[in-house]
Image 1 (cartoon, each protein chain N blue to C red):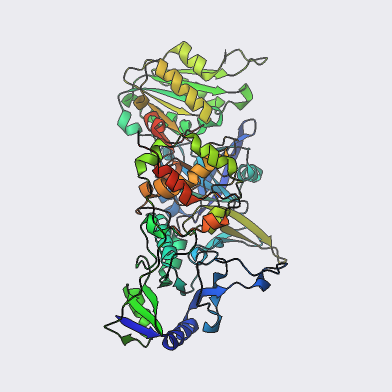
Image 2: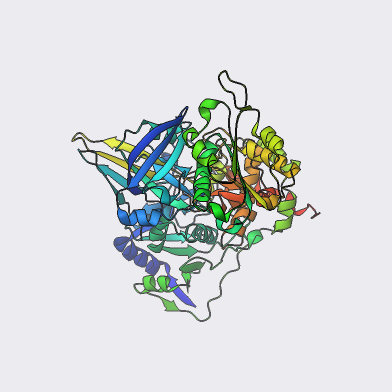
Length: 349
Length: 277
């Protein structure tokens, strides 16, 4: 097994940060939360951010408040630009994000979530904007040594030390990290790293939360018209927090914004932003028809999207990676793990 | 590679009122190569039309390529994008993406009687069906066209009815929902007129477009007349932001209207987990 000492890892990340954009877990401080005097609650103490140097990296982090989704699929991005000259003639130019980006310290569930986004966005016809950014992104995973509160990755086919969808997986051991090189892309990066060979290295077993069964497709389909969904919907505030913290949600909205310049020319940007199926008017058409006008229909859509719609439409088994963020984020305690267990108790008719 | 979300540039070469708040726009693409790609559309396909400044929205195409070197799109001024398209002066540059979605399987239903049922602006994606049947009239049996709107001023393509009715072996029934002074045609819901005319279900296919509630009730009426759900086609609408199965906006259960539709057999619609209403 390959091994990298902590000083060598820091040195290597320092080199990588000079050549490419380095995204890593950082501490979210109280200072970044204006008006707040209290420390951040557990589980919300870190987030992913672009770092200038390795001294900014937070090492003992748990689950980050947000996943690394925004670094492959930004909250808001320009798809293309339309220039209008003085005569009113327009030209369209595609926006390319040329940055090479390394996401260091991504947790296995969040990496798997990028795998879900890949399955959707790269299915032909591929989303070119996503594809080009994704090809220039490296994922250096960091195994979790335990599952945190609300985590249920093992129930949805993942694990705290899963090798899926990362280029390199690091596991914390004494004095450093075990290095598992998974892809050629990962190998490329490691050329500049000082590694040791440790044949006797034993990887620690992560501490697991108890796993439960995810109900099969038939159970979902049979429950579609169940009053259960209305009851869940009765509690839902349609606040969309669950969707914004979700690492696999990919719904988006596209709008155009125009700015007039003093010289008589104009620039219009086509802006894509994250959207949420939990919004009341999400599914409404201009004529006013709205097939998901009730909150219960919308909460049902979110759960079905994760466990039935995406799996049957794209090449991926399940679209929930069990990170538990939506459980922590929900102001009315709608708990996806509870919903799954409720569903599992239903019998297939 | 070019992004499938990037529009082709086109120019608005024609624009006329065809009903209250409904205009028919004619668009010509600036680049002949792009036109060659775009003009492969078939009846039922949709395109995104962009004002290049106020956003884009999906619209059914209202003509077939052979009927002129341009794209016809009929737009009801009901939303943000449609309103800004209505404001565009002739000669404006617009963005066009497409063709997207599936199309009516007209080549697979040759030799059969065809019943075309259009309500309001829902008549727009049916006009290319009628145009196609016009140019392949001998390949199909009897043609019955049901055309409806809430009131006479909302009937679309009125100046073309004469030409449609003049096709061999064709009948057309136009109706409005409620009586209006000066209107001496049919009055009553489209379902009523269909029941009165009773088109034969034998070796026939019905093609419907209109608001979801109309598609639903027309389906029930056709079923009474003996049409099976495999003899009914409908085209659905949905809000969309990509048209290629990415944005997640248009799903009905596990189906994506943009990619699996917008044209569906009623038998498929019945199997949807989620209702269209």
